Length: 94
Picture 1: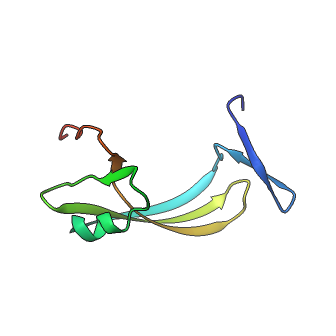
Picture 2 (picture 1 turned 60 degrees about the vertical axis):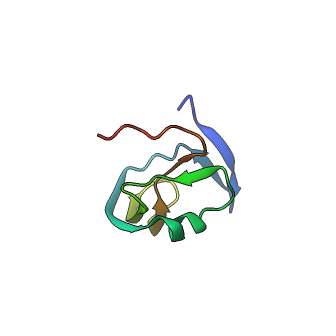
């Protein structure tokens, strides 16, 4: 893997990015939520919420079941919002 980056070691195991995942299952849910409270959850001021409608953001909930990868079998729940760097133009609607 020519573009692999060794991030470091954990318990004598190398942590390499990008991680090659041979098998996983995933489910993703999107919820429309008020943009104001979502904005308040962003750390720092480098990013801003992408509004999908006036005063509406999308909360992304992903449930991942990683089966076969170098880090072993584990489950993960991810929560996030669609964001963009502050000052970037609004992408055109698809």
